[in-house]
Amino acid sequence: MATNAFAAGAYAAIQNIGGLKGGMPKVAPATGAEGGFSSLLTSALDKVGTAGANADVQALSVAGGKANVVDVVTAVAESETALQTMVAVRDRMISAYEEIMRMQI
Image 1 (tube, helix red, strand yellow):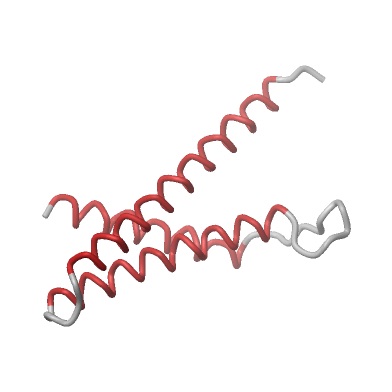
Image 2: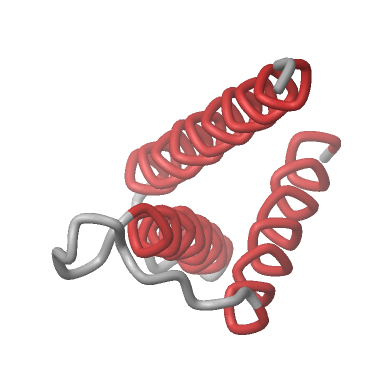
């Protein structure tokens, strides 16, 4: 049960992060190309949210006896991997920001 509560909390956190993207200022890409860094992050957040939602659907399906346990385990593993990747990217971004702030002008 503790793992389910953790997964539900992580999924909720990702959904809250995804909710912030509408309030973020729009920044034009420096290269003039479609997208850019902000669209890359938005896409990654959407994929993590989708993976979490898929894991939830699979878990509810197996609870109702409509899905295979292997499908649930696969969906939860994909969701966990996506979330861990997003956390690693966040940590690297914070580290880069802190390094930039330490630079002398």
